[in-house]
Length: 311
Image (tube, rainbow, N blue to C red; front, side):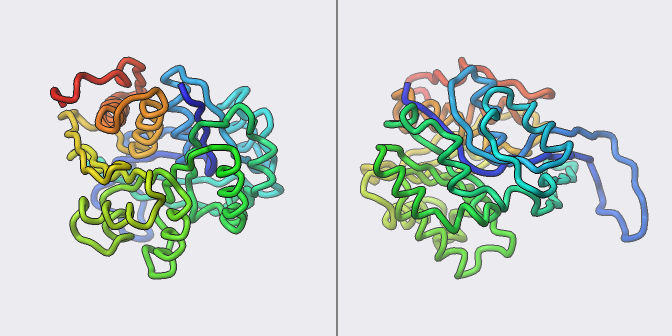
């Protein structure tokens, strides 16, 4: 299996809910559920690989408070070389709604201070050569974004494919943010966006057409993946052929981080030599199980999908 790594945002998630309707300002409501857990796109991907029993690396940082130490403990040996930023740890409060959707309130915190030096001193480059690194939280990791060119140069020099999941820009998909993302994609080999992100970024209302547009702006052998929630996933491969897989019908318990779980499972299957279609199916299967189980379950058997004819 080719090596895997994730680079980017790890923070604390406080999940509360469900809340319906949204409370009137100045009032208080009671909710039935709360959970304090490791979060952030990079953190969710890493926890998925860990739950699937896979070897991986993760480059992240923490703040210099009790939450930072708590995050470090949550990742054990994988966090041994994480730097400590001289500021509070990023905290994200997620309010869930009865339909499974959620609203987040997030502090900027430590993740904005993650730098290229932090990343390169955390990762074992030799062990990652020939593998894939997923870059997460681009619109939150300000210091690292300013040094993306160095990161991309490092990846090119060491035969490391970069997969990109920028997350949603705080100020939306403005023309400036679309321009930034297109510039990053020009140097990435795998794009991992949800349906709304893909269509907004490509200025197209149709997901498949949007995927083709993004693919045209990337290296010739690139892959564009569109995560479609209950409708499964589609992708445009290196040969420009469109493939898609459905999602199983599940009783949704918690959708938070579903896209990150998909990313991790998809890349793991791809790194293990699975076809694009089978890798999509693996991502959908693992993510579907994760969002329908409390506590979340990750089953390595879900990475092994049936024949493509059965998908």
